[in-house]
Length: 101
Image 1 (tube, one colour):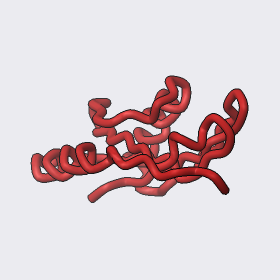
Image 2 (tube, rainbow, N blue to C red):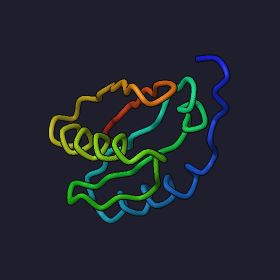
Image 3 (cartoon, one colour):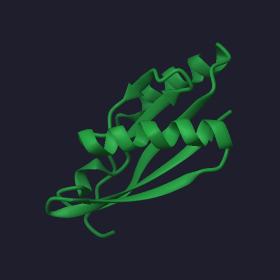
Image 4 (cartoon, rainbow, N blue to C red):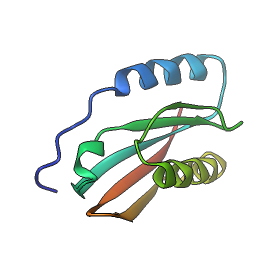
């Protein structure tokens, strides 16, 4: 997806994920992996979700975050990753959700 610049605030979320994994929590990470139009600035944003529903990070779009939380719960339960595509006003974004640990 041309024109998408990576967002670089994931380091804090990944540090929290590492700490949560050390605490024994089951986690998934949702990452915006592609975007076009108004979604392009979202590329690289991460949301860490634990099995209890606690989150760290932000994706920058409410409906995408809600879908990410739901997908994270399914990924934690199944272990299998998911790739989701969202039509957004003026563009679209692709979200990859995978289990950590």
